[in-house]
Length: 185
Length: 185
Length: 242
Image (cartoon, rainbow over all chains, first blue to last red; front, side, top):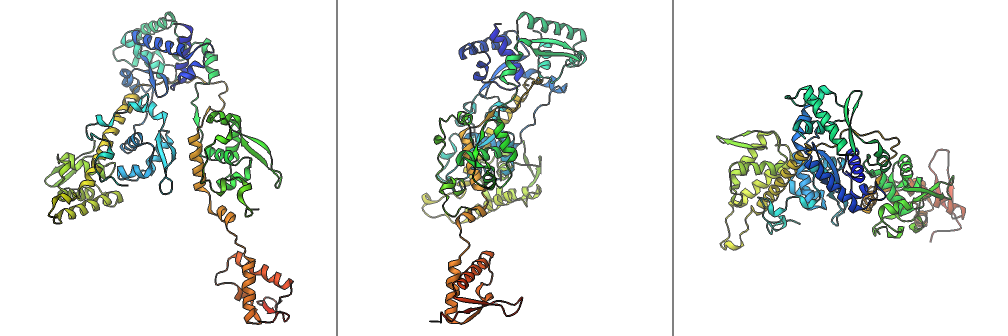
């Protein structure tokens, strides 16, 4: 392992959160982003080939070392870690709408879910899973919501592009807007 | 790496504290303490021979995987451990008022926000986002606040002129000079 | 997964909570393998009512709204269709659209949930070394944040500020005009007559300022017959009524 790879491994072990390519490159004044990319590939390969219990994953805007999934239960049963609380169905539905329709107002979310989402929205904001991203043009200039980097982290996604495409879903074969002429204003 | 060694690596990585031989042995119902000792030796040797950035160390109350000391400084300096934080809504609102109405006194900010901004102002100053820029003419010659170069840098702006124009900025956020004769005394 | 099974026209509710009326309705439809494009609204509306009754949801506004909508569609379905079938709009169209849209969201949210579960089985480093002097964490701030904050400030501004800036509550001129026009008809007024039925502080102050000014220039005389009695305002003889 060259010194840069060692340094990156040490940093990724220390951070307990994803580190971006920029953050990693800044660790060594002599390293370029492409040096860092090479070292990351090397590290990834070593964990794979050496059959380690941890792996290097790419998530949201960064890189993170995580334990392999197959050890999840053994570690949780030994109470070495606390698995994060699951999101409620209401929270997941709200997240789904925001993820696909962003930027989207509270009113639009409520229209689709058929219930008030005041409390859910607030708790999603508190958990940094959604954020206000601007204002709409309509009456009262409603706040518009979008997803955060942290949501990607929570889902283990690199970008929103990795969400299932609507035309891959079994239910609706077309975007919602095309489902019927009866779409309300 | 055999499965037990992988499991031990994952457990040591995810645990928030050093793990004793007994705890590690309890992870796998089929493993004996001597199996675990063998696996720990194997893990230790792999980190050494593979010249990893981390090492397996035995501390008073057990075993722990730590980053090598030689990388500690670079990592501490980069402050990777702390997650960058978004400003609180209160801080953002105060910052927004200062950005659009600078130079502005604490009293004026409090007048607009309707709450005391003492703590928020101090933390914005600590983070080098706002600074005192002079004294007002009023009673007691209050300190006036403005934004810093660092804030512009964070926002990716070259100058304050590049702040988005908000046409419907109401009276409250307009520069005092434009308020006309009816401004409050 | 929540579900409702139909047994002898009654419903066995397996899980107490649905994430909303659409969830419940969709469940009714899917569990009976009803064709969503041809929903027997009359039947489903009755089942829905029975279900929210069984679930103790019959006081929840969202569920009642849905029940009312279903009943409305049920009635519309009973109306005779026009002869030219082409112009007939299926009263269920909007309901179907909403249901399909919601089902799509459900599918995505199931995916999100399983994705989050998968990820939650992979643990990050647990032990975080203590930092010598961590200081405040680095800050993330962008223009969007700032803009949203401005909007929030604007929407939260307490009304009194706007009033103080915009309104001109003291109206000495108006009070002066009112007093002179009243004294044009009569020689004397009681002070209380000058205030409307519900004078504000600003009204009172305006009238008093106007009186003082009129007295100063010698157009009225202020007379108080006895202490604590109301004040009388008399027209100065130099300025007789027109």
